[in-house]
Length: 157
Length: 116
Image 1 (tube, rainbow over the protein chains, first blue to last red):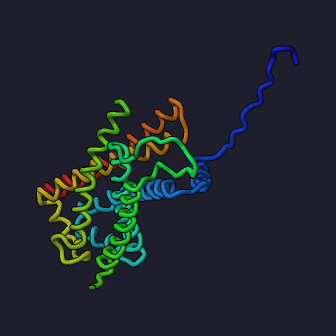
Image 2 (image 1 turned 120 degrees about the vertical axis):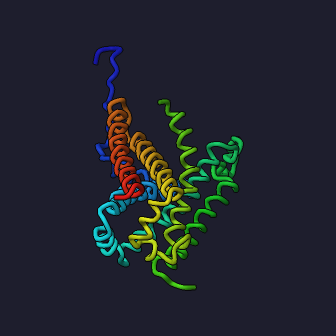
């Protein structure tokens, strides 16, 4: 090799598609509460968008008259669809409350002040305020599961 | 439009979405209906489109959910890869989806509200 010429090794980059890239990120360690919340937020967000897309076109059948509407609702009114609808309600509740946490985090000083990382290196990013909202999101999602089951399956408490 | 402006609009949209979605879900279960089965009946559903306040709620919900959902999808996709071509492709696809969703949604609301 000539003097002054540096051998540069080409960066080895994985040729992953979009989905596998996301999966690798999701399963990569360390897994903490904040990352788990982001993961659930993303999965629920994409799921809700997918549901919303089909929901617009399904509800559009109302303009085709009673027969078309009732026929479609007859197909969709079954236990399997109810489970899907329950997931939508639970996902929307968690996504909403956790979204408020993220919004408050971005717009207020909830994130906390930066501190020097001293032993025993406590995580500063997920403070008590944030944790409280996150646990509220989980509790609200659990309550919405109960409410959803009662409403969708017509149970009486 | 600047990304910061899009994000500011997103904050406003989130607030509108939280209120309208909560009302929409309540209206499927207990608010003004005797149950979920009753909410899915043709006449109950049509009455919602014919009532101005309820139709306005559906319109705000449609716009807010479409904007927030597609803005979120765009953000996820832009995090995966970068570059001006990818940016243009993602933004273009998201705009096409927005036109389809808003177009069909508005069509349903207007036709059902006006009678057919």
